Image (cartoon, rainbow, N blue to C red):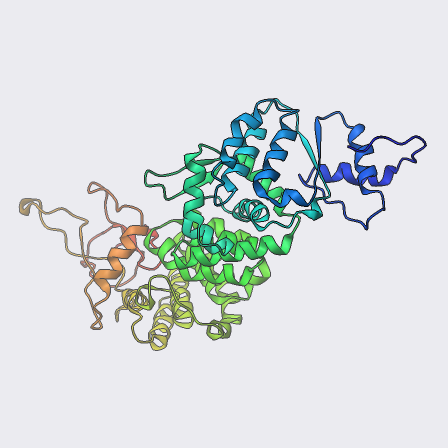
Amino acid sequence: MPRSRPGLVPRRRLAGRLEEGLNRGLVLVAAPAGYGKSVLLSEWVRGMSEPAVWLSLDGGDNDPVRFWRHVLAALDMVRPGIAERVSPLAGPPAPPTYDALVSALINDVVAEPGQPDVLLVLDDYHLIGSDSVQASVRFLLETSVLDRLSGSLCNAVTGRDDGQHLLEEVDRSGLFVVQLDDVRGWWRYHHLFADLLRTRLEQDLEHARRLHRNAAGWYERQGLPDEAIRHALAAGEKQWAARLVEEHFDTVFNLRGEQATIQGWLPALPEDLVRSRPRLLLAQAQMASMRGDLQAMEPLLDAAERVIGRADEEPFQPSTGPEGSLLVNARAMLALQRSYAAQLRGDAAATAALTREAMEQLGENELMLSSAVQASRPWPNGCTDGWPRPRKPSSPASGGGAGRARSPPRRGGTTAWPGYTAARAASMPPPPRASEPWKRRASRGRGCGRPPGRRWSGWVRSPISGTISTGPWST
């Protein structure tokens, strides 16, 4: 470290900037030769209470073995034993990369939470141009955007082709990663180490966003929407994230019933973006219909109708394929959801008209949507296929029980009904117990399979919303 000079004028403003930089983990001081960079740093270091080491570099330190041995020797002055523990990773023989050494070094420094932070000053670092030295640090920084690490994922994010080898090498060294499976396929960084790297990476926001974009693309190709959406948002790619939500809604919500997952995705999207995408609005309307929440449902459908023309502006490739998607045809889905809203209001005429409109909008190979529309087709007497039609209760002597309902008939020639009901079963609550009566909507006049002159009750589940309506009816 340069010696202190008598009569030196303190540069308090610059010293304050250096103090601020400590919170970011890395400070780069750049100025032309002779402007006093080393003098400034030396005076600042002398005034610190935390331990600090100074390493003056020269052109010979471009040999990575020499560079890292000098770094370890300097740190050993304030953390005795660190050189002995880590220097074997520098060889001989010299390793093909120094990622494991860098990982071990940083892991050793942060391994003792009670110890104060260490300041390492690399004077004249501009003289270091070795690719291997730079690459070791770069790999660690770039993969810090990931919560979990695999060879293929690290390659996709960093552009390298040796990610698996590097991860296995670090893992064998017992350093700063935690293995997540038994086949050496997935790891994660220790949390303190990951936080340190991310703090450094955040200083180059555009670089970080590029890495997140790479990660989002890899996760999308693997069919992992949760991680893909998170990285797309971190990259500032909100339209991309919105498209991913739409394309995976049918699988996540309709087939798997993971409502909490969808509710975690939607708030992360800007409200104006959601309002501009009809399928996102229809997805929210369907969630409201699952709760039987007409008050929330109708404004969403109104908003979807205002922007319905945008549904055709970009290709839609649902994760279920078009045959398993309800959102594949936005116009048909809008009419279908409006028909169900009419059912909730008890408006039989509007239900029938809107269901016919949904049928007219259906396209080819839209089997799930077609079966949902078929299930809501009104019977001539105002009932719908999707509402179980009770049969006349048998007498006690016959051993039958009152309140059972036969399955709705398949009408309209569709072959999608079995697949549709199987899919819906995955996302609907269990049916009432056998001891509970099936209840029927209030209805006037004959029809709907109701035996004349008798009171009847039963559970009713809508095939679109999955909600259960109750209410006795009688002649």
